Length: 504
Image (cartoon, rainbow, N blue to C red; front, side, top):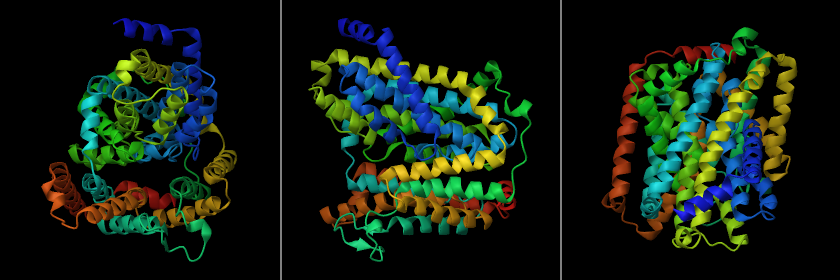
């Protein structure tokens, strides 16, 4: 109890709260700009943390991470462009809801889902970190392969009624993901002698090109019908109605938060996988799965609860074993090491004030994020009233800057342009973009873990004799079967496909 009281004393002071607030605001700004990832935002704040005490330094980076993860929903909803890679699935229902004149509702539901997901993951982090960390250590290449295979099975249910086109889209994504050096032997593949392709296509320019550039091209060809100012700026979505919506979707919120936390624990998984996987599972469990992709609240809740809850999950292996769950926690780990603090099993015993301070700043960042974005919704929604001939060039410029900033090279800008044209062609011909992104993300992970598993043990039955791997493989088979059956029941393109075709 003395340690907890000292932690509150170290956090609840004007200086630390202002630092945390600055981190949250910076994170929201970074998260809402296409191409500027949360990792970039935390990397920019890392040098500032060196001159601070450990609690304030971690609080600054914590604020950026929590704010950035929630900030991605702004552009995802308003423009159909993922602000961060972990908000891809948010665009599936957030943007259609805005086009239906419910921009305030979309942002409010996304915001509260992000907040609740963060709180739930924080609670799980405090009470079960050691147990979950030991569970995560059981994941070898066999389990990771099975998990990624379970994720890729979502292609069947994300195909928008056309299973063949969804499979083609997913295979194209996997094909492009194979470009670059072999993950185990470093032998070049499909590089055609170009040194720029040795590291493959960076995921961020691909993502921005597919969603942002293709959407901008569609808007230029056929501008969307303007939403009246009175509707677009209606942010007074009644709190009782909002709470009722969240309460009626309580199962979805809790399930998605648990999925996000568990995925966040696993190294190299992160919010982008949790975001899409949770959306797919929510669609499978929903009685109104046909409404997904048309602007349903369930899709936004599933996506935003999962990507924010993955933050809490990523802290579990870092605090318990000193193993970073993702790039952001790797930088936080580096900051702690610079201050002479070694995360691991003895951290709670040796530095209880610091650990409790991290927990408290995590929850405080969630509340600050809720307050800042609630106050800023009116400003965000006024973006809808900016003329298209002004808005489109600005967004395009931000997309180009974001792509260039990844590696500081023009090649990534050309990648943005190329995949923008591919995305535009796919939308015009009713090929869903979600399976393509899923193939890009999961394809390399599936290959790498499969080859690592086989190199350790050529016996393929090992995938079924290891309990976690066997369960995940069964879930993958069930998910794929369910997606195929659901797709076969849909004999014609849905309204969302028709709308995409018309806009393209």
